[in-house]
Image (cartoon, rainbow, N blue to C red; front, side, top):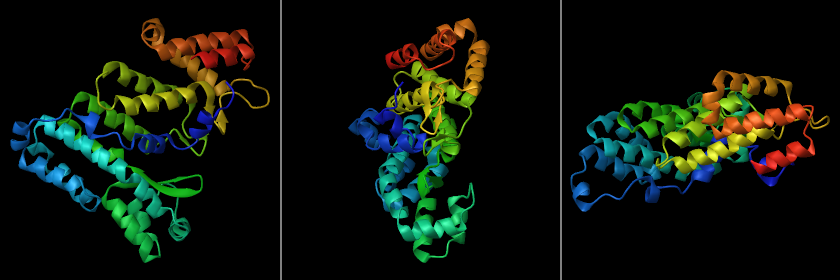
Amino acid sequence: MERSIFMKSIAAPLGLILFLTSIGLAISFAFPQRSKAAVVKSSAAFSLFEQRVKKPSSLSLAQATLVNRIDEMTPAEANLAVLHLENALKAYLPTAIKRMNTPAIQQDIKDIYTPGMSMVLARSKVKQSQTRVVLQDLTAMNYKLELGGGRFYPIIQYKSFKVFKPYVSKDLQAYIELMATESEQPSAVNGTLLINWYKVIERAMAYEDFLSTYKSSNRTIAIKEAYNVAKEYVFNGAQNSPLFDKITQVMSEEAAIAYENTLSEAGPEQIEASPLLIQLEEFLMLLEKNGDKKTQAVKDFLKSI
């Protein structure tokens, strides 16, 4: 498949794309509107959380409230609170990125940064007071420090959401796991895949499984977006990690082995139940007939899926 504008757009970390494209998803579809009677009966913990989560200045307090008092909420309140916390973090993310993205702050972090450094550690090592204030604020809001394209930026630290899993519905538990996996190890940064081809197909399969299992989840749109990007990685790779060699147009041997082994381990029954694996099987069969090269027939197939 020829490179497209869309292909270029997925060069950014998948986790960051999800966060930015999901900004604005919110209360209107996040949960059914509650009746006046339900509002009256809201728990004290939920009411306090809702009061705090609405303002960026008290977002860290809202998180503390949820961590410490979610067990005082009803299951419906716990679900809604977790969704509202994520919405608030997404809504503030552009501001958080803008605050960090100044020449002085970028240089200050660069001077002390080592791979994998946490926001907390970076805050303790930077020299400028302005940088410390920004990193302190974002640390309190539980954002995570990331590096991509030569720039430092914050992302939502979904691993911290795992503490809420015992109190929320099955679909949100699964959603938190998927998002935590991606935020802890992004699929790609700056157009380069950071995971092997086994994990590329594994993540796409995980998103597909969520979509088929939780059709009515209010995080279906976010996972659908993640699935579309993950599927693009499966069949094309990333800009700097293409599936097909740019000169010879031959498919990556490592990817071919990973995909063949994945299909073999899945077996006929699982393949039949997965549109993604069906397409992958057809894709490999077509490649075999075309010498593992990206011929016109292969390009046409990729355009059709």
